[in-house]
Image 1 (spheres, rainbow, N blue to C red):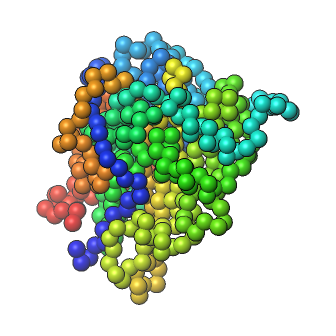
Image 2 (spheres, helix red, strand yellow):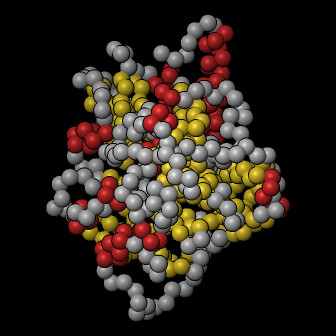
Image 3 (spheres, rainbow, N blue to C red):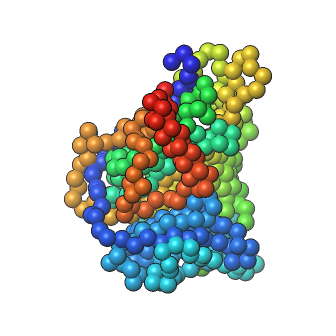
Length: 427
């Protein structure tokens, strides 16, 4: 591989795996497309949640506020609940929606907070510790099997050069259990424009596990272990009411005396029930060489590669009084500097996963070893091409942004031309 760099980019999250298989029963479905928008400004709302009432079927809007929701025809008389942090929930009968071009507007939630709340917690760190302590009570206490949609993209500066997508089955153990979650790859596809990669090829090692391990409430040891929580400073920021629940926003950052890179960000906590509803955070990158050793697994000696940004987000959903992992994403930006070259290259990797359905694991069936995804998986190596327009069938996915759709079409045209000329577009 003289003319290629392969960067195996991996999170430091590792663990053993257990699991079970799950596949949805094929059923006729109805498809709804549209946008989620701010009522006042018509600004698109990215990552708004859409959930079919009294079911576990859900999806999220993309970065441009667009959504695609697939619902079994047997549920066509149900309601869909649309929610977004800081906005009032909206319940809409599915029969009032069209198959496409729906525009759903959400109103900002404006509620006057009490000037004095004698029951308000005074210690931000103590509140975070209590949330972690009660996770076994407030989050799913039974093993479940989840269907999720996963997408990872690689960009060179602003150009999409690689896209991989998958439907995975997640065996989610109880939040009180020390056992790790497992996954099974059900469907996957990819598209790569190797001509845009020039002399660099990046691969994301770990695939869907990267986003699964962002679930702080299941894996607190990766960010707030019993020891490392003492290495952070916690502060109360603003507060708000969301669906009549008082939400505290707590910021955190590592203490200046801690040399190793930790995290900074914000936690959104339901203060009455001691529940983390969302978290947004980034890795502190102060030591370039140390950060590079954390993520870059392979590179030529004459190339310097280092991350310039590593950020995460996780959102939780509620069903019947229990909360569970619903969506997460991560962004990693890298600079690639060839010695002797005037300009460096900037690459970014984005991975996101959304749970689209789940059910309790009542059978206790164990996933066979041959069916388990390894935590070292490189999805781009496992997936097939984008040839089938009906590839996903009834499975809910996150709508691709326009830039991704454009990149797919361009790559497909290049592949068709290459096939007609009797050459291959891939190395």
